[in-house]
Length: 155
Image 1 (cartoon, rainbow, N blue to C red):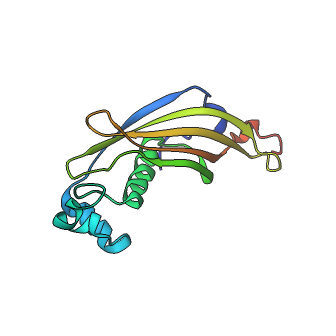
Image 2 (image 1 turned 135 degrees about the vertical axis):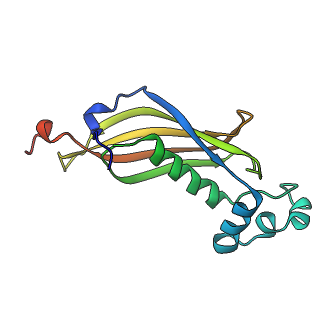
């Protein structure tokens, strides 16, 4: 548990956070693929060389999982209750062994929950970049965040 709780009221539209460093290596890519996405593109270098990707690459599901981890690390203490809407997910380029990804999170806006006054929604854009600063992943999300108890109209 983080010592400081970040409530809906503390999150400001226009704010940007950036950080994280997740390194992909061949074995991690293959291990994830064996369990969740066993395609040759993610498992076998020789087979992957002859695909559209022209080499071993991480599964999109693996990239998404890393996004979720980096998001969690970038928002310590946030009183996030749930992700309620994810849209416009784009896998912009293959993630390869040796790539190190970082996340940029931009707060687009926020609004109170229309029924449950103890929560609010935060709209955000998430972009991941590799070590060459090339964009590899994009998603926009709506997260439900707890409101500060002292400002909660129903308290």
